Length: 360
Ligand SMILES: Cc1ncc(COP(=O)(O)O)c(C=O)c1O
Image (cartoon, rainbow, N blue to C red; front, side, top):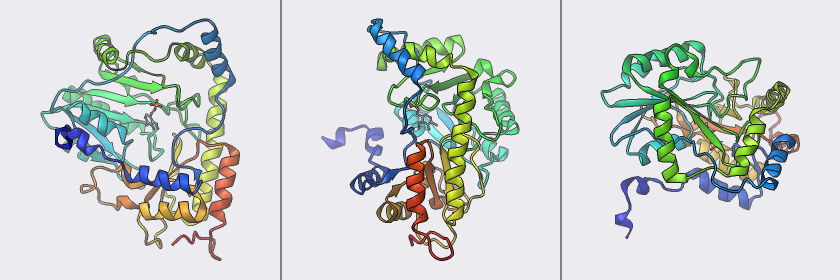
């Protein structure tokens, strides 16, 4: 029967990341791999969900979420590296992902590379800022380059803004939709998951021009129906949080970022780029390390009891990149102080007399 599977289904095989997850579970490793907070969600949001359940919000709720805008063969521009899910979503919709490699160390957008990636089939572009896995926040100039291309080529921009409230060093998120003439061609997506530490609630949203919003709604109803009603009620309370909530969130995450960033710098990683947002530090392996990213993470699990994510899974345009994409490791710092302290102790315990990590 296997030959009856669609060609897309055949490409969706378990990744090395999943295999490393099994190893990490067996070794009971501290999880700096996955982007979920391991500390409690805010009380005002949880109380709102409990109160919605007590008030009998039990039936179908408003259905609005993003699914797809893509026809068979449409090309969609993605930046590389990128969050893995976009590739799968585009392929499942029959579209073709086209990657534009960002340039390290600051993961800069090169406007010539972007321009060369367009064809007559280009329909849309996906922008994620602040960015998973690098922690980059696209600059105003880069946003203007992207907006200019969307206007000139009549493209739809789909923005993934799940880390919109998690920015550092007094930087604030700027949505592509706020640039001139972009509101009418941008679909903003975001969710409760990261800002309110509720990745398991599965509540997200899309904000789009009316005609796109109704098409998105129609497709979404057919595929997933609605998000859970009590959690949608709690979303109202979450989105009405006080400015102090968001200030504290940024401050807390900034100190978590500093903790992991400084630790990795101390033990010899090449830290040329400090994350400006998101949950992640994307660290470059020390030059002296002969291991690939996957081998390194395997050793990190076995020797330090800590799991992170090999960077290569986030890269797709490997042949067009002029750097070695197997030399990055993604560390998630959206963890409690206890988890970060335990991981720091384990990693620091594995240094040689020069203070460098001796996993290899
Ligand atoms: C860039 C990005 N977009 C979307 C998601 C998924 O968010 P949600 O929990 O809302 O599905 C993640 C989760 O890691 C992410 O990093």
